[in-house]
Length: 265
Ligand SMILES: C[S@@+](CC[C@H](N)C(=O)[O-])C[C@H]1O[C@@H](n2cnc3c(N)ncnc32)[C@H](O)[C@@H]1O
Image (tube, rainbow, N blue to C red; front, side, top):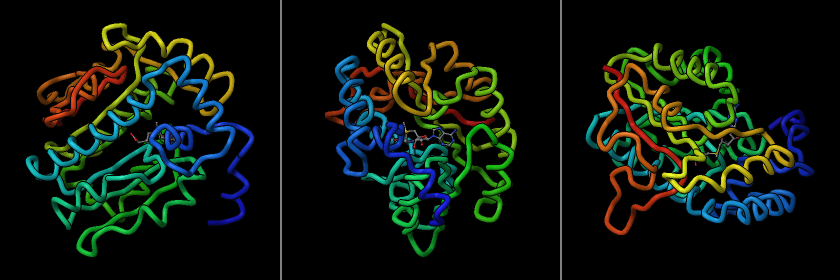
């Protein structure tokens, strides 16, 4: 870590990676993150459940991809702070030779990268400090670790919501998926204000977030979420609340976060 990275850490403004860590019950957050996190939770009381459901979805999706779809390469963009069952742990539990590249642009995640980088000796676990708005740069940076001639699971969980322009978000997804071959997969989660998923609370909560925290966020409708999957084969059960994507016994339910996994034909 360089002094530049330390300078980028701001403890006077709530950061998404740290507040997400707070909602997940983690300790890698500052008082400002907890104040904003509590206020958001007062406006959208199920936000902690959303965060936990999103992580559980990640575990099920990665397990499916490694165990059943034979995927051995994972590009996890918008990694977040290390928590239980990070992508490399889930994937390498099934396939010790799995190769994972994490990407995030938050300096606090960078400071924890070393903790993320303890993968299996047979596989590879790398971290890239990069911005999702620049997918071409991400593709260049992953080239030493991932063979883009072989299938890759491109994972964007809870991150396209920080790309405010929907056309730009589509371009990012298209650029990434164009660079990987048939048999690759896209794994997405995204918050919504859709009342069908109980998302009404997100309206005020996101307005509060955007006035008090960083980076700014947006919600998307089912149609907008579906447009990120254009040209891909969406796996069963389709676009659902991420809690209801192939839930295990004792899981399931509805949270205001879409989830889907799709395969590039
Ligand atoms: C809501 S968290 C989700 C973390 C993890 N993917 C999960 O589902 O638990 C979003 C993450 O995206 C990162 N992020 C936000 N905007 C980003 C950008 N433009 N480029 C890269 N990462 C970004 C944040 O720093 C944060 O760690």
